[in-house]
Length: 242
Image (cartoon, rainbow, N blue to C red):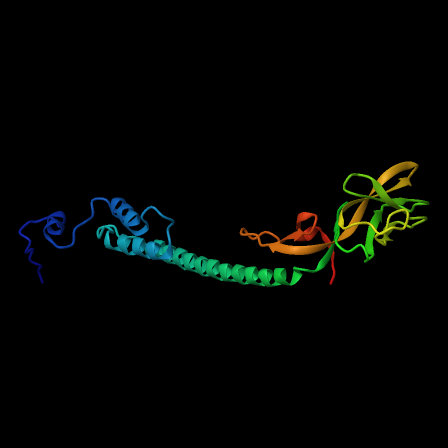
């Protein structure tokens, strides 16, 4: 059986040129145009990725089509991209829920007393005793806590006595050295003790009232706005009281 050539001597290139299916002159150019149209210069998303894949199928050379393994690899990339997009959405939802939980936690702190490391004390009610503590890096035979007013004048000195290493508590009853009640105001509390024969300043922990709370807009930690102290990071708080 013979096969008759009905093309009249036309080559394959002539047939493609006269048919509706034309071999692309530049597959790369077609994909680049599709990329620009799909993304508008923005980050490539899954919809744009799929559009590029379809464009690549349409513009492949019929004489040298794309290898099947290459398409499988691209589909795998598309699947990974879609998975990452879903993961980003889930993480964003979790972050939003965490922010809401943080806001709820913050609202419960307003008006409460916290213990922070500071030398400043806002005394609002001199009739109520103030409980503080100092941090001792080693045991001491003697030590003092000196309370001064806003002018720097010492109004009361509390003897710590002999203490073991660790946290040493002290109490100020709101009176001066003569026993008179001091006025409302801001006071400075400093502690010192001889350690290894050298007078050493000690870290002091005092109570403060939370006036308000500032939420971080970038996912950072809470900032407590304390009466008489100003903003203090939540991580700096040693104890949260009533």
